[in-house]
Image (cartoon, rainbow, N blue to C red; front, top):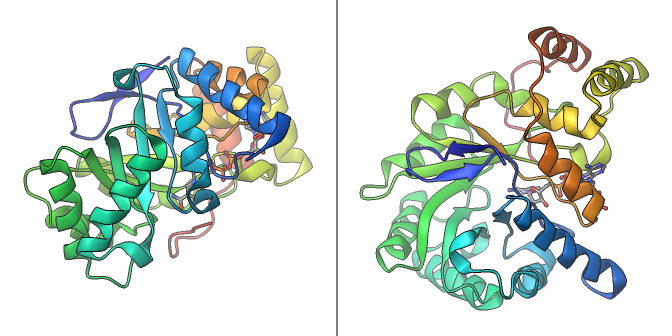
Length: 282
Ligand SMILES: NC(=O)c1ccc[n+]([C@@H]2O[C@H](COP(=O)([O-])OP(=O)(O)OC[C@H]3O[C@@H](n4cnc5c(N)ncnc54)[C@H](OP(=O)(O)O)[C@@H]3O)[C@@H](O)[C@H]2O)c1
């Protein structure tokens, strides 16, 4: 699995991790989902992304069940505090609840899920406190515009703002206008969520044909080409969600796929960026 430095944390992370939103919660599909996560970890997809919001806490429990027996230091576990809980005390309490549900002892990364009505400075102070208390290793934000991301970073001292987790896929490339460059200049990693647009990234038949052609040339799938296109950006990581083992196998292998410049140009043309505007969110 290909690794990259995660912002200025000094830690290297796999370029492809694993999302968990909407993981099946019961029955055979839940069993396969747990197996898929473990398979992904075996393949090096050790960055596991979750949030207190997912299944109102149930997904954190499921993830906790999936990782039983895996040495803790092999994993990079990320969770997020809901904006409604993001007061100073609320953030401290929410982190402890997430750690309990996951049964993981500490979080590797803890993010504010999207901008909150609570004062940002307070939330960032609470995140920093969690780091100094040893409950969280690194902190980040999610769904933040460039200026708000820099404001969040400005409230931190001893720990850097590790990342901004944002929507990015072939049909939603808005972050390429400004956010990607601002993040890179400031040593903040971008974590691209919903990289397959939840299955809806093929905009038109012609766009699909372009991806098919590139995929065939590499003996790859269109989903692998879609990930490889996003990963051409140097400061970027992605966290596709896959509850099926065969999807996890494909996504892990996508990390080793490098596209030629002309292939990137063809995909760029087939999936044009929209005009610059507010950050798109899901
Ligand atoms: N910070 C935020 O606000 C935010 C918002 C949204 C998402 N996220 C995070 O980002 C993660 C990923 O985004 P997402 O879950 O919205 O959607 P996504 O990753 O774009 O799409 C997931 C869908 O793609 C399918 N899939 C996965 N790998 C595939 C492959 N190789 N070939 C074909 N289909 C494949 C999955 O099927 P199966 O499950 O059946 O395998 C699932 O139906 C989330 O799970 C969550 O952790 C964060």
